[in-house]
Length: 159
Image 1 (cartoon, rainbow, N blue to C red):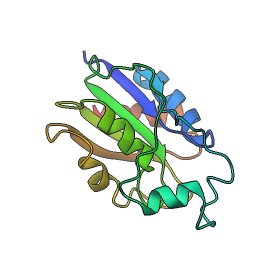
Image 2: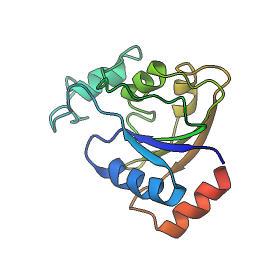
Image 3: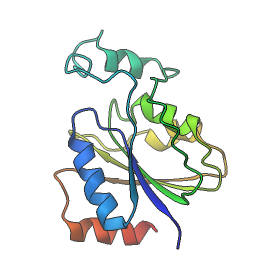
Image 4: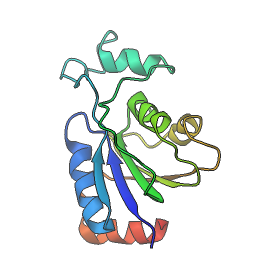
């Protein structure tokens, strides 16, 4: 059996709840991708062209710093990575996480929460942040706290 991890970034708590449920159903460890400087409500105001999230997403080279807690990805074969969709892609903090660790020969399964958009260009945007031997699977949008049965069926379909 391969060892599984659910890693997630959650700015407002929505993705955190889904990640916790998913980890339980998948029998996976849980890891939070934490920004070194937490996001405030003002930072997340996507209607403000000068908000932190807007500026980060406009600059594709932006890599918000994450908490350095000596976490190691080495022991995991399959990594579910969850995040809210921002501007039709993953927040750039997810790129920071991917670039900080060696995902060579690992299976990465994405999941996201979204107010209305799909994955858009997420997979293509993240591919440059991992080794070419890593497999990235688009996964699913998991809004509204899906049931354990729905999560279990999905996990079994992607493993």
